[in-house]
Image (cartoon, rainbow, N blue to C red):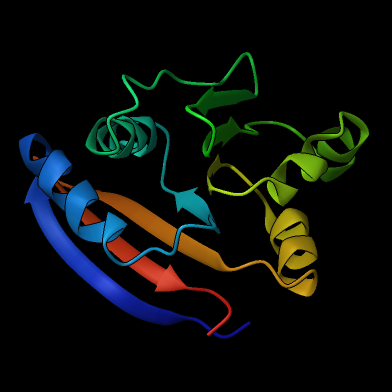
Length: 143
């Protein structure tokens, strides 16, 4: 899989809104964005900053609901501890057909491969803790 880094920034957590604003400018209106980072790295915090930038309210973690929808074109998924087959059996793969931004936590390789093969525009935002700061890296996955 080819990827291309299009954005990289290290910033304190209180600047997450400005990072979200900068990254939003680089994303198309329809895309799947995989969020990569350790537990408590700030994936949901970053997603909340994006939701706020879009004027869609406040995002909460979809850990137990698996999916949260904001407005009619922002989708947030959390597939922690889920196997690809479980995601498919629940019909959640069909959700990616809807127009908008799809932010996916813990998506896994099988889901990424399926979506790439189906022609979706895929991105990855890696979030890594660096002391009291976070490093945000945006990559285009199907470059």
